[in-house]
Image 1 (spheres, one colour):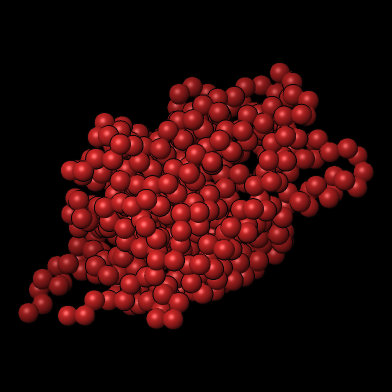
Image 2 (image 1 turned 30 degrees about the horizontal axis):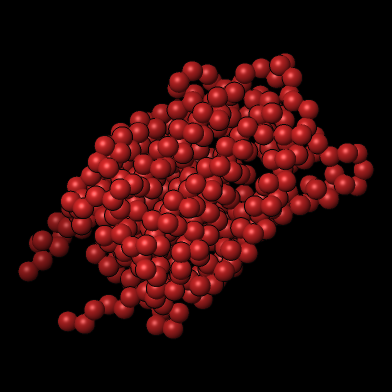
Length: 421
């Protein structure tokens, strides 16, 4: 029996790290800080630290598993191999459905910054264009992400410096947030949406050279860089805007620039720079998201958990073209049919379930990596479940319904297959 065609190992460690960073900064810097600030108030930096610690637990589990199973699919594959088909399916289904919503959110974020008033048309164009980039091969994906990250990070650094040098928001700004441990945990759960980009490194593990060395380095490098950046952003935004203004802002980075710019033409120029950075960061996150969803869909199709047509790979560019195209089609439908700006909690719940399974799978590994002791897997799994159920009830119930539908359909398909002669 001939083996199905595989993907090409074309990414080095630096490219893999860049893909992870690009997947995170678009979501975190321009989408998540306002709703997280509304929940945590002045305790926003603590929420960032909690989210970062949980992300480290999950990154350690993911890196350990990716070393053992360096193939496309991430925790879908790890869950199947270590725990069985049903946990693997639950992880894959949670990842694919949650990240499809994230793709739509990132595309619409791009449209809102780049083309206000025609945001949905711009979002659809972005999805089509970036899918085309992905179809040209993973090296093009990594190169495009590297360019985006190199342009966005200096702008974010500039905004951080401007925010810290601006006059501090007065005490009249209040403490903001819902307060208490519940508000901090809900903010951490929302912020986790922004830390999930390192999953793209694992889901693309079949395309990384020397995976035993490069995947762990890329995961921890991307996570460490992004944690420092997010902590600086949280502290600087609270300093410049105050918790109440941050919670009520739809574009906090732009508000910081407006508040700190001298009167005259320079304010308009700086506004334009921030808008361009937001648009580019959203594109970087969207590019990595499309690639990650496509690779997980490929792995699920290979095992019969999604239609087999999604397992087709381009012989010329060595990419899962059918899964990438299907991802783009679903995202475009979501963009045209729904308002997807409220899907951060929905996506966070699906990803937290995904990583809870990753931690449980890593706990069963006989070979331990120094950075992933078993106790850390236990803490990571428990923390993921706690954060998942602190999210808004609408997000929790919606994602539970989506997971239940997936389980019911898979059970029906398996029963039908058993009845066949």
